Length: 232
Image (cartoon, rainbow, N blue to C red; front, side, top):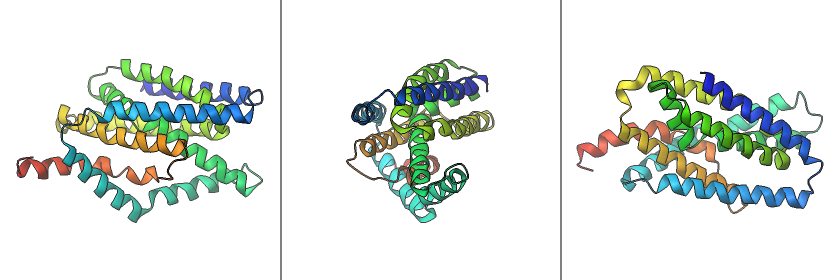
């Protein structure tokens, strides 16, 4: 759990530095930085997704996962929840909406991806924290740039980052017998597709509700079992 705390602190410190720099960064530059991070995010997602060797499994997991996510309306429910919290510290509804969305975006960038999954699993299964420490450094740099462009929402995302990574570490300790190398690979590929979607949103090319993709992680092991029965 120490590595998870280190990662969370990295997000907090990076966000505070970025917020401090915001006043000295012109809005035009901030927007350009955000788009640059969006491009890098897409590259990171592609690097993880190209490891996929069972495209049918990926398609099924994403498609069914999105269907479930849309039905539950994860994005809408979490958006309303975060807005309700932030209204308590914000005087204007529009500002509340912006902070809420930025909090979700920062949470997705720091908590949905190959390094989060593999790093947390390594910490929980093998007590190997190297990947989470590496991720902490990357998140520190990323959050400086994000907070300079997006503000306090990035800082608040540290809470969700801690909860998600801590949950994966704890669950990994109990689910170790069921988490094969193949399953971890498929989970990271699904996360990489979500990373690509986040990058596209950051560039303003799409308005994908990436939170609604999250049930795909749950679908992966079931889809693997079913496809194996049919020889895929």
